[in-house]
Image (cartoon, each protein chain N blue to C red):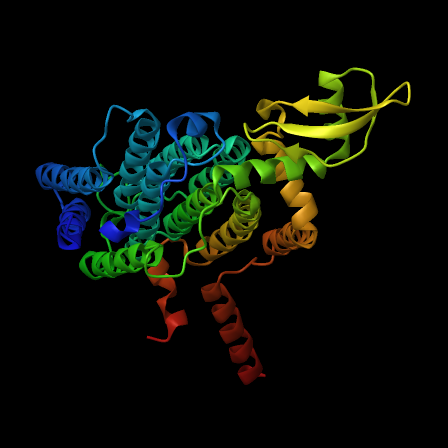
Amino acid sequence: MPATLLYCACLASAAGLYLLMRGRNGSVRGVGTIIGLGGLAWLLSALLESFGPLAGDVGPLLLPLIFGTIAIASAVRVITHHRPVIAALFFVLVVVATAAMFLSLHAEFMAFALIIVYAGAILITYLFVLMLAQQSPNGDGDEKSSWYDRTPREPAIAILAGFIMLVGLIEAMDDSKNNAIPTPTVAQAQEAAWNDLDRLPRALLAAAQDVKPTTAEVLGPPLVDENGGATIAVRLEDDSETTVKLTADQSPSNTRRVGLSLVADFPVSLEMAGVILLMAMFGAVVLARKQFEYGEDETRAAMQEAADRSNES
Amino acid sequence: MSALLNITPIVTQSLAELGVAADPRVIQLSLVFSALLFVIGLIGFMTRRNMIVMFLCTELMFQAAALAMVTYGRMHMDFSGQVFVIFILTVAAAEAALALGLVVLLYRRRETLNADAWSELGEC
């Protein structure tokens, strides 16, 4: 697959996006939608083609394909819709689709945290502020949005810059050009999982007790065997020592390993995150204090009045 | 871009189903989608005039970054990627609180959400 074809596909989607932004009437926007979706489909099919023959094992690809397309389409609506509230609701759709992609990447905890924090908290704040600052549409009565929501600023230059950015990003992702760290083999991944279990003493003891209920103490780290399981030396309640074989599905879950990585590998960053939240709270309190009884014009008028008065006296 | 696909297949289908190692094709797709999402957020930030929607577009870029982090974490079977997403969520929450407070202040001063109303701040 020559790279130029892929860039042509990107250009087609860019042209569609331009029409979507610029189009004043429905038919131009419809053409833009069709061109944009066609460009996206072209890009994706070229990508899929380069994966080699798809011999019936498209199962793991379906979820990212469907939800990625939903995410891209609703992201385009976020930046093209002329009513900010609807754009914010489309952003919720982007968040949900991204969470579904997280699920297909086995990041279960992050998927649900994303929905709760983003769609549940941050987006509600955005909607609140949008409705707080919603102004009566100026001018013509049946327009439901202000002129600045309907008129994009320099769409051609912005899309050109975005296209250059896309090329840069894709070049940066190219594994063959930068000396990429080799991806771990399956054996290394399993060993890492068992090492993480070793750093969780109570979970390790519980796993051993699942197999042998009379286990009193774990004596050594889990030693990986060839089919993904592990062997640990334990002492039983009657002071005899033996070994316990753990199966592969007793290795710690992804969520547990995220938590371990968070508190064991990044403790200082965790504290910093707390400080950031505290400072944001202080900042929000300071910003929200009522400090503007007068707008700028009123202040200027009041100063003018005071100057006049002092001139008179 | 075709060289983007050079990640060596590291796993047979059965082990991929166990969730032990990643399917390189899923990694590729997620990376491409995250790049597209980031670029759309960038274009939106440059073209929209409404201040709140501009911040919404930065959130789009945050989403794309989070997706790339999780994808690379999955590719290297390293959970630091997901931990970084937790920090992204923290920063996004702090940013939303502060930026929206600022937007409300600016709106009270000029009675418009149009970012061009404040273009004299850019000295041009």
